[in-house]
Length: 263
Image (tube, rainbow, N blue to C red):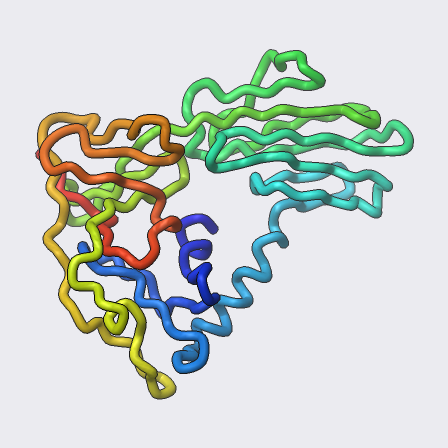
């Protein structure tokens, strides 16, 4: 969701992307509201309409919480409401509050993603739980829930690298589940270059300018450090100074997802 959908619609006019370029120094080539309408414009709209359909699953035994999105679930079959309060991913935590007119027994299963770093924890009504689920599984609480019960979940995130299969010196940097992108400026990006030309059906939009060389990191890991008090923002620790932010935040500027690291 964060890496593949949220950054594909321009917040200014709602235009969509045909594809997300990953070559260094390119930019997101959005269409225009009236002239560029690809198949991805329609399917892209459908993708945004479906963001909420997998936050919660339920079965006869209980409820699954799969995604960390501020939301309210009306669980008609059990006569209960579940309120999720979170600012994820800006803050790596979420809070679940149960609203029910009478005590109700069920399993509450909260996903603990594979990217969760050391220090994941949970508090039930303010009291720390003695155990927590391993990354890649679910924290399961089987109990009788009462009105106002509150579960606080902490899901720490850390930096990691994902090398390409054929060249381990070329890597993408991630923070928790978020793919990071190096900001590379706006040189040469005139208004007529930033957006796609009107296209015929079944044609691919063409870029009218070249990309930039791949960012080369220097020194030893860690190659990135937090950038002051800016949330979800990092900078190179040595060599060429670049700021890195989640890919979904990048708009109307050049960027690079893959970087070259020393081997």
